[in-house]
Amino acid sequence: MRSELEFQVWRLVQKLFDAPAFERLIQEAVDSYKSAPGLDPLVRLHASHIGLLGAQILRKVLRHHDADVGLTDNYVEIRSRLKTHIAYHLQWHLMKNGHAIDEMKEDHLSKDLGL
Image 1 (cartoon, rainbow, N blue to C red):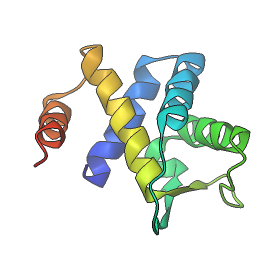
Image 2 (cartoon, rainbow, N blue to C red; image 1 turned 120 degrees about the horizontal axis):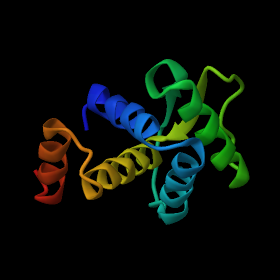
Image 3 (cartoon, rainbow, N blue to C red; image 1 turned 180 degrees about the horizontal axis):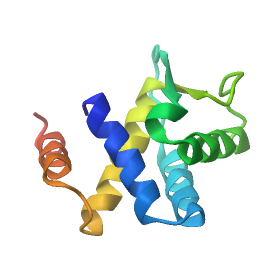
Image 4 (spheres, helix red, strand yellow; image 1 turned 135 degrees about the vertical axis):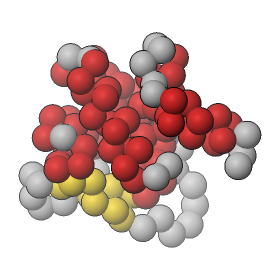
């Protein structure tokens, strides 16, 4: 998923759902993640991209899982595969509830087809 589309997904979910529902979605995504063996680089999700609430809730959920999430509130450090998994989960939820924009639908379909 392109970064800008990923950030749109994060922002749209936060706009459509209240904080407890958003937190449940993040919790579901993290709980359903299965890490794969091998090197998985750390990436930063900045609050300016995923929203302040997004960063706060992601940090809270990851800390609940004993993950080291970085030193500042401006971003959350996360493994790249987990970042992709969470974004895909949020995107799927938007699709399921009929809230995804066309670009999100096309991106989701291309992933499902393995393109």
